[in-house]
Length: 284
Image 1 (spheres, rainbow, N blue to C red):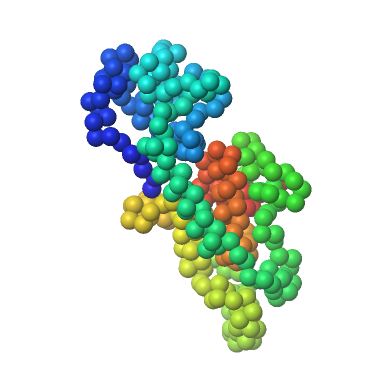
Image 2: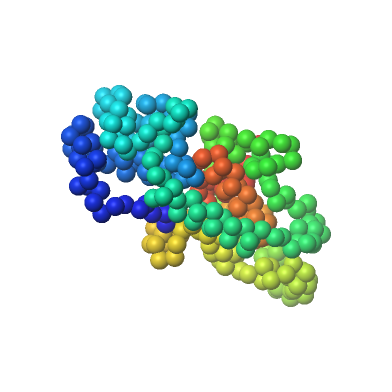
């Protein structure tokens, strides 16, 4: 969980008292809203490029007279205006620079763990099932072959992503196993698993947990933060859907998830594992 550094004297600091005097009770929350916004979308430098005064006030959740909050924040030093007119948070990197550093470290760890796909993994899947293997990057998601680099962002903006489909309870091999007593195909399945490597031996539940773990690592969600209690069940369903989009193969799904996250973060867009699953199934 990403956290802000907050001075214990913030509420009684002269700048905060001046801001409250100018705007009234509750004004001390405006800088906190602004810092949280910058942590999400401008963690690298704390500069809000292209923002008008009205947009700045919206980021602070100001609901009073237009222009009044922006003026008060400038006068009290909570924001400043650069030479090019952009608003920025003073001393952002000195006080909140850890946010971008942790995010970069988490992404590097996720890419290192999930970035490599074993050679032949997708080819083996195509040969043993008789169906063409899906691309590690589904069409109209991130970085597809047709060059539609903006499709991820536009898909969310236009609401084109489909509802996350349910994970089927049984696949075709399960049905064959039941109808034939499970004996006729067991040897073939064992050979296939040996060809596909260790990931193939994982059960569906383990694969879902590993994919959720990849998502948490990428987003910098720390163990013991209480995230699992509130979000694990919903994200396991999203992980099941994402795995289904890649025919149950863990590594291609994890690699695509990291690439999707990079694309969304670079576009300044919020995303979740559910968002990734929806776009993995979006065929245009």
